[in-house]
Length: 211
Image 1 (tube, one colour):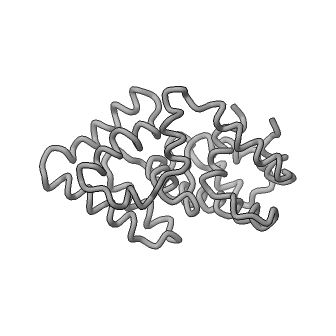
Image 2 (tube, rainbow, N blue to C red; image 1 turned 180 degrees about the horizontal axis):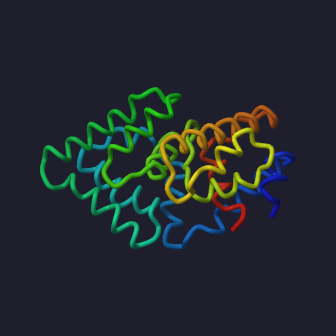
């Protein structure tokens, strides 16, 4: 497998596609179906979900996809279940969904803050929800993205990345990481004369490249 520094600075189109295909080797068998579903998610379908359906989507699909360790899934969904304690709270969750679909997708901070208002989500979880729903605009940020990008010596943001705590990313960290992946996707599309690359695909590569 090509090292991230070589891929980032000198990778040919085939190299990038090979790196993306590598992602699927590390998906747990228990999560393969949800990964495939999210890889081609119908965003309009999610947009039209009612309050109960939206809650079930988060509980049984998104949180299950994001928090693959059983203990983390149990911890985060315990917070999410707050919304089932009364009718007004489940409607509150639906209003958050409306805000998620209405905000300006170029405003990374706004999107993260809206998703952070969902109980159980931190910056990494918020970024993942945005990446799943709007892969052309957002990327998932996590410890793997940070650790992989530390291997790219040409990044102008390398000092900022070195200052991040990979296990406790802040909103400002998430913004920096998403901007890096957005820029790379745009660069690859321009270089290879395509529209294939998205920030979400870049995060898939960063998640898996050094495993």
